[in-house]
Image (tube, rainbow, N blue to C red; front, side, top):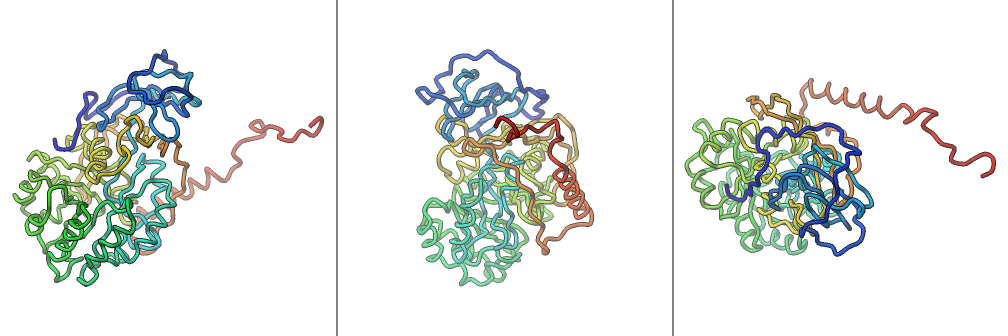
Length: 458
């Protein structure tokens, strides 16, 4: 399978026990030759977790040591006495911090954007690739806002300078797709922009046909970057736009029932896949159909990246988060190592993300996700209401960004233009009441307090 390193270890149906493990001790042994530092104290040791790191080629029970925000050592056993803090993770699944290849952040400035941090701390996603929320006109403001997020936010620049300030239509005015301005924007923000984004469906390009894509490819050629192409309702059809794509360019919403049409995916799609065009799931609120994905899997075309297209209209369903999307892939027969590869090293490699993003290699940033894998068969759904059964749930318990746990963040209010069902509104109201009930009472009773400033003798 292209771009997927498949380690030995548990596949679909991961069932290691997931009970409490705090205080369990295992004999400490010498670090293996996967230890990078020459001595000193580690800031953190994650001990005894079931590691699944496709990019690093490791699986099975491992300890992970962190120092100065980076991975310092990885081995089956590491000495606990070298760590300032030890967290016991027996029975837990430990992966690199997840990389979501298709998200939309920048709330308050775009139609689709959400704040990543309230989702990141509970989902394990430490790298949120923003897929074209900003074009050249708004990118300086986007860069300033994203610098304040707790997570990493590499960006795809929208070829339309206006970006996603509205639901649709950014490329209907071809003058907005200014190649020279797009190239200048990339060069003015070195390292922040890792590709280009263009939405190629009739709602967004109007009568301009393939021209917005041609301009995106021209800009990408000038900058040496890939293009991510959103597909949807024709025209243009997928078969028309595929010949313009180069090896390494990305089709997002690759299993879209809307783009596939009544006849399923076009033979040209297979040719593009074999020629090196990368396929990204891009679930979203309209971009993923189980039957299309199953046809692609049967044809030997698994997605190279499994992403959410998480935005204001998918956050409360049908997407919810990346772990929920991952178990949907298990429901159609992908293995857990495949899915973790497609949410860590795979997307990082597709965009050339720096510094070991998506791996737990020694020296990489200590972006780490810890999950409880609950072996619970349950129903999952695509954007069209098709249902399948997943074999487990992935419940995030800890998310570390540069070696520090992301702090809890309350979700932000839903913008008034986001459509919600009555059931979704009722569920949000119940959640608000539950949070209020949790936070309103005093944290502890009298027996849980100490006299901080003694009355006598202090």
